[in-house]
Image (cartoon, rainbow, N blue to C red; front, side, top):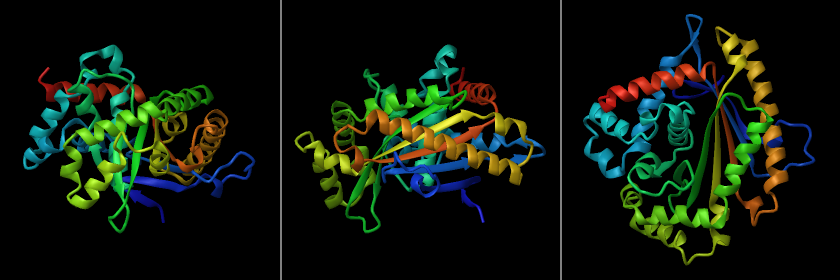
Length: 310
């Protein structure tokens, strides 16, 4: 039986070492999650994907205080969320679709990993003058006992393909994200925003998190708590050529995603493994194929303009 995340299918969710035969380069901190959408009437379900994006935009485009104030008025929350979108004001920039990938990653972290959105990134980038590159998502996940936490800094990409040259670009972004000054900057954002106190109601645990992430704490203690979800939303020729979720389609996607996962982590280990405490950081490659990037970007842009009143 195929596992589900909302209306999407999870093809596999496992350690890389469990499904590849060439292990000469492996470490034990690599995970892969493969997700697909379905078809209906011989067409990929664009409406399901669009609903997923708009149902999760509020988590990343509004602060916790704003979300709570609009909890009973979902449509108003969507309007306020759309106002904080950066790229609908620039057709050239928005053609990259970066915010769609960011929102999708927030949704996946919330629904699959049960993550708490501590820094609403689209809100933060829109409401500060600081456009310096940082994590595309920032989340905290509490352990089952509720007395400890892990820190998730995400990287989200929306590509026309996930060929080898694009994999190298992603690794460069991950490398920048893991630099000490970048980690300290993200931790400073977390501890200075009120969202952490509103999201984590256990005062003892909240204080522990803030103290752990303080600038006085050595990063040697923080890096082992780091998880890096790397989300690849990409235009897929395999998905575009099928008209139903057949066994052949599923097998072809699984084989391709496993190949890409091995290629990605082989490159990442070669490029980044000398980094301090690299082996203690957990990396989660999340792969999601779509048939037509232009269609998704254009439809989202038009919907965003409606909500923004443009």
